[in-house]
Length: 223
Image 1 (cartoon, rainbow, N blue to C red):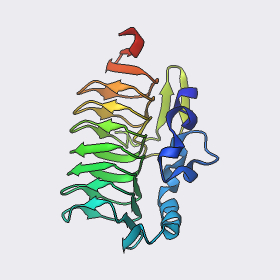
Image 2 (cartoon, helix red, strand yellow):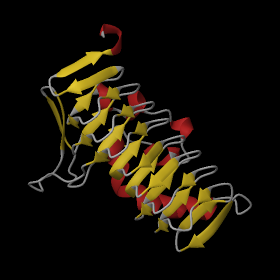
Image 3 (tube, rainbow, N blue to C red):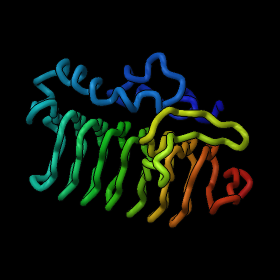
Image 4 (spheres, rainbow, N blue to C red):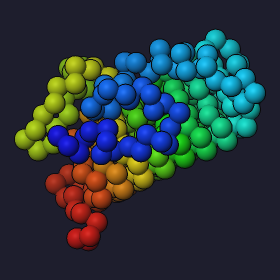
């Protein structure tokens, strides 16, 4: 399943978390390791650039964090990021450089690469969002199946058993997700792809695609 591999989704120079991907083939393999990785990385951060604000919480001095935002560790907020009014960061989260985490957005067990925007009423859990990816207002990652069974990543006839009960979405670099869309457990969206507003997405969407609705996905050069 080449489209879902780390090498085909992410530019690892665009995140402080590059080392956690080392030796992995698929990005969801890092989900169980995010918390421990943050603790290890946080202790090595330059105190001239980052301040420790609580147990296992490191915030870059150049980041802007609103007083009403809730921060729980393990957590790293990188340089020039903005965490806005009433954002709810539950822990095991890396917020990359220049990211925007908006009003009432909730994060849990996530890696946001640099320049990611989740600016308006988003839920992002057990997910990885690539460089300059953007989730429109109200779009969410659904990270647990309704029957509570383990998540399987599906690309046509190809299936990969992840062994994970909680797995939201893997967004490649430069992905655009339209407003009020739901990315179902095990969704993988390839680089430079667009998801139409109010979509219900599942499975692997290949890079440079436009997801219009289930069964109607076109390559950008074909539109």
